[in-house]
Length: 620
Image (cartoon, rainbow, N blue to C red; front, side, top):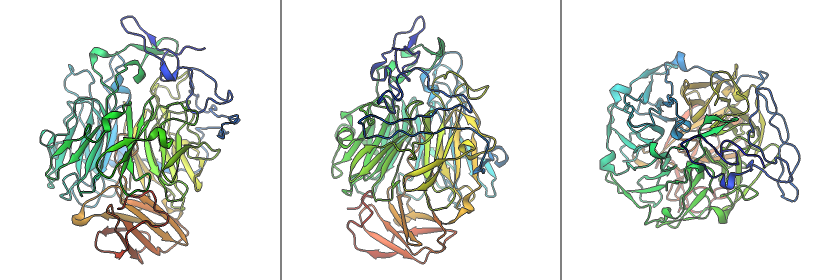
């Protein structure tokens, strides 16, 4: 049996003098995607050099699981899907992890981005969460940045004026939501040392209301999701935590033949439980973690997404955990939660092994009316596709599924959108190592990798785009948080990617003219943005649907508007919206090729109740 220098890829962790040995545990000798019929076997390093192959071939014996076969490439062939425009647009943010000598665990996971219209001018602005210094004794940490969209691909740094640049807690990510229902989007910063809630005053500035709201927390948080779990009309908050960490418990680990490197979370044996906060409706929250049963399962949490995964009309929570089983918190009528990930089939992979879950998305890949789960994972594990059949999940691996091309990479941020408007979902994954590989992809950044772009070819089917990530030249970085945003309101959705210890990548969409489209800005009464509202679009004899969901990917928040590619269909026949209380409204004759604001009460009403193809959207 091989022994690795870092338990993120199996075996024991090498320990330098003064450190302690970390348990390899359930990761020892496991590649993580499939350990079936000797397809992968065991090993310490799954990295591939640029232009090399990281492909699999063969199939599992008796497992009922197919293994993809093919070649991954960073080649320059093919059309350009995105152009990098950060500097010329005025988005000069550069992430800083604070790495200096010692390999401190928080440094390797940091970096998120939030998309919001903070000033109400209709254009999407960009907030970048910086790392800073994991060592609390260091002062003068680099701050976060807020960029105001001036239109025409011009942005202005308004951080100081807005009052959101402070960074005492070491930033990990951000969630954007109108928590108090006043029509202005607020910022919730996830930190290593206490989170921060910034209330949008509506005048271009924010105020820190963390103490009053009661959502500070005291441990390392990774990501968060706002959602209305009890149906009272107020946005509650689920916070995913990673581990209990301090300088005093840091462990010295190694990889690549003894070189110092970052550790696995298993090295610390210090899982930090997640938190559930109920919104009281007066600007404050109540911690109901214990009362609602969310304390009954732990893990090293990194990703979160909400949705009605069993079609009972109540919003559930999926948590992607690192090296430990995932959780699927099923909502019991707004009165409590029960973790049923193991029972429902999304806790482990197809052979019963937990993977390193990072980013997550909930989307109906097959167009059957149920929200599947897609999770990005560690190199050698491949991304995971949990297919949802009436509330039961199966870890599916197919030759041309959404996990295609992911095996040689470590994935973080993820987005499923129709970037070229051909009527099929595409997929973008932001990649970056968390440990050293056998060889570097690029000189100057040993954790950098190319990102991955898949073009949808049909329900649940994809092909890999070359050049890798859809850019020429291929961009390399230790990518972490990533968010989708239509930054120029042309319907072609763009991407914003935070790279650990690297520049921000802003990717302008160049392929949106491949078909027709419609954009929808869905609002509750009073103009509030509310996640998890379901939207169906009918055009050209086809129906597309998805939920309003800014809170997915990794440590980031997407543009809350929905864009549907219509392919060759030139006219939209119907748009149906199901609100969280189950009531529905319909709009007819909406013009394609532009955005429409759909406010509650402005459409034609329809009878509530279950609608065919709508099993994955809440509605009571």
